[in-house]
Length: 403
Picture (cartoon, rainbow, N blue to C red):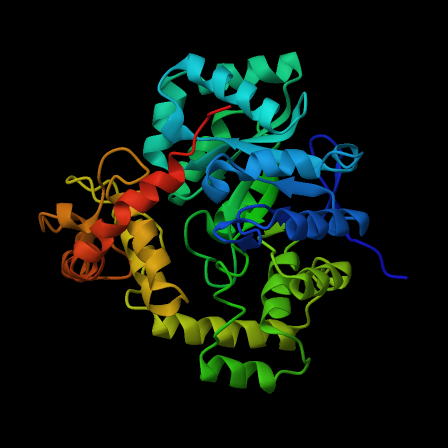
C-alpha cells in the first residue's frame, strides 16, 4: 500500500508530509466556516498521514486559528506540526509581538507553535518588524518554548528575500511558487538560495489559488490532452512543484473531499526529480501559453527598484497579469487595493504614484516601457471598483488579535 510522502527539515530533522493543509480556504456555509465538514476534512487528512497544518490571523475573518484549535483536540494536536503567523499590520511595538502570540496560543488551545512565521514579508514590512526588534522577539519566544521553529512567508522581490534569509538563523521559509512563478517573487533562484542555507521551503499557491487547475483556457486543455501521461491539471501543477528536491511542504487550501483525496494520492508518488523530460516539456508548453496571455513580460527581477516615487513596480505588474489570466478579477482587485493602495499594507505603492521619471525603464533588462505600462495598470486596477472593495479588504485583514 502506497503511503504518505515525507520530506526532512534540514535543521531539526522533522519528517513533514510533503502535502500540507492550508486553512485559508476552508469550506463555508452561510458565509462562515462549515465546521462539521471542515473538521471531517482536516481530521480525515491527518488520519491518512498529513501532519502539517498552516493557518494565520486573517484567514476566514479571524476565525481560522480558533477553528483549527478546536479541530486539533481529541488527540489530533499531537499528530501534527502546527504553523501560524505574526501579522505585521497588527504590530506597532515590540510588546505587540508577545501579546499577539499569547492570544494565538490561547485561540489554538496549545502551549506552543511548531512553525511560526512572520507573515507576508516584503521590503517595507521586513524593515518595520526588524526595526521593532522582531529578531530578538523570535530568540526570546524560542527560548521560552512558545515557538519551536522560526520562519517567514514572503511576497516581495528576490533581493529582499536574500537579505531576509541572511539576517537570521531561520528553520524554514514560505514562498509562492508554481510553474508560472519561476521568476516571480522569490522564484527558483530564491528557492535554491534558501535550500543552500539548509532552510526548509514551504510552498504556497502551487496552483495560483486554483487558477492552474480550473477554468483552463481551451488551448491549455489541448496541451494536457495530448501529453504522454493523462492526469488532471491540478496533478500536473502539484507534481511540477514536488519535482523540486528543494521543496519541503506544498500547502494546498483544500475544501473539497475529491480534491483532498486526489492531492493525497498525487503526493504519494510525486517524488523529487521523478518527472520525465516529456512531462517537463508538457508543463513548459503550458507555462509558455499562459505567459503569452500575460499583459506585461515582467520577471520580477526588481532591477527597476527602488522606485523614486515609491511604486512597487514588480507587484503592480504581477497583480495586473493575474487580473487577465486568473479566475477571479475581484480577487486581483482586492489584492491590488490591499497590498498597494493601503488596504492592508501601510502607505501606498500603487501605479498612480508613477511620475514617469524613466529610471525604471532604463534599468529593465526586459526593456519594458514601464511608465507606459503602469498607466495601464492604474487605469485598470486603480479606479472606483477597486476603491469600493477597500473596506471589505480592511475588514478581512483587521481580524487581528482579539481573544
